[in-house]
Length: 330
Ligand code: HEM
Ligand SMILES: *[C@@H]1O[C@H](CO)[C@@H](O)[C@H](O)[C@H]1NC(C)=O
Ligand SMILES: *[C@@H]1O[C@H](CO)[C@@H](O)[C@H](O)[C@H]1NC(C)=O
Image (cartoon, rainbow, N blue to C red; front, side, top):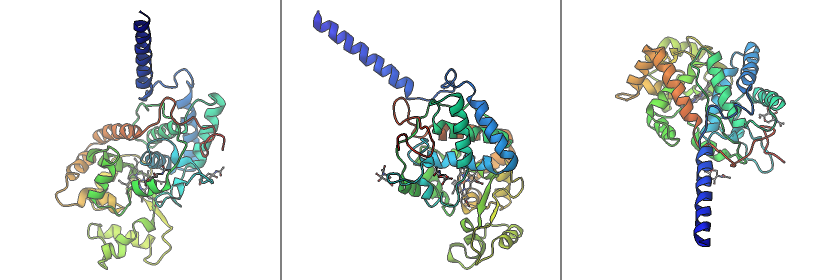
């Protein structure tokens, strides 16, 4: 009798643990419904205000979320500044002198902390900021899944390993995304984020003068566009000038990125690879998104949600940081 009772209790406890684990293990759109009902408005306000003085900020915030998610999951690890114990991802090749938006994230966090102290993770703020940036930029809206927790660590060498490079071939791009559980369709749809924002000459200048050490420009680059880019980026310049990733509608999150690719006006090699790799399965996807803003919007939203689910910390994993740039108590 006593034994049966204790087994019964154990089974009950196990069931409860199981239930709480499975509830915590996944994100939900209503996670802060009671604990921070104004969250969406707070984040929207800060991004909208920042956009007035800096039309590029939405692009920078979307990229911040991407570079967070590809390194040990969407856990705000990218926000951790360098300290004695943190090897900051901000110093990784893809991020150094390139990634931006930290000050606006701090503003969002401060505003969120006044209304709902100690409640909302920095990882969730990044996910929401990306969605709001899409909305403000003329792109799709979606219901953001929430409930992520913030990491206690960062990993610069993993950032160097996982964030794809602009000189990657299509096979390398596919492998990089596959490593995160993202497929070819996600790769093509998410690359559409390059419909907004800027890039430095240094990340594509090899295409303009000496592509793959041939001594010639990349043959998949339109000749007028090549000439324009050569004026912006001289062969022996410092590489720090900026140009628009989308030559046609630089600040609108639309599907012009894909029509640019079809007219050989992709800025990065990694962009043009999607359309100019002979026989690739990405060509028809580029055609589809170029022909239909609706199809693009639908898939971009779906793939952003999928990316936002990568390796999330939930339940009692990690923490809710008080300041996004530092782990608590440091
Ligand atoms: C497919 C592989 C990708 C590669 C190789 C790549 C590479 C790059 C590079 C080199 C830049 C310019 C950085 C600079 O010059 O400072 C850039 C900018 C940008 N990337 Fe990507 N990217 C990729 C995918 C993505 C994805 C999946 C997203 C988001 C969903 C994204 C969003 C952006 C945005 C919005 C910018 C402009 C940022 C700004 O203006 O601050 N990229 N990317
Ligand atoms: C943390 O790093 C960011 C980006 O490098 C920088 O803008 C910010 O000033 C740093 N914050 C602190 C408190 O050191
Ligand atoms: C960082 O990532 C590397 C893989 O590049 C891994 O070997 C290492 O254990 C990670 N370090 C930490 C502190 O998580």
